[in-house]
Image (cartoon, rainbow, N blue to C red):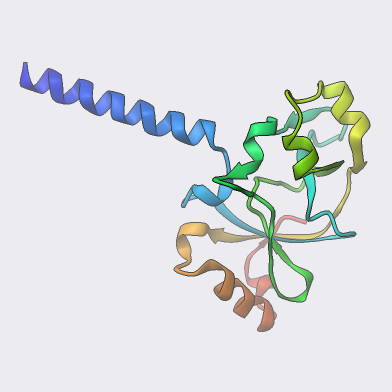
Length: 162
């Protein structure tokens, strides 16, 4: 009986942890998430990112209006040296940016349809560079450590995704 109680407790704790992660898909809150460093062709720091298919004809992933904040702050990218950014939202090489800002999108009652989202795209090829710099958990203090890598021109030691 005691073993059954332990197993059930473990199960419910595990489910709750997975639920919390699923409900808060901000990359910055997941220690084993990749540390993605990138540069864009224009300043899209405040624009909502979505993920497109390889052929850019379909939307693969997009946030709900309630998904854009961590606590009281928007999950905007962290500004690094030399125009680089650290992803805090969950982009990929197939990222596109919407004309809506985080503030505007978060004020919506519900996410637009995928058709409406496609019409809101302002750039479906915004990345100049994208590097996977290991995992966030590889860093004790990610921002200064990545800035040091950038200053030393050592980004090329990491996997270049674009």
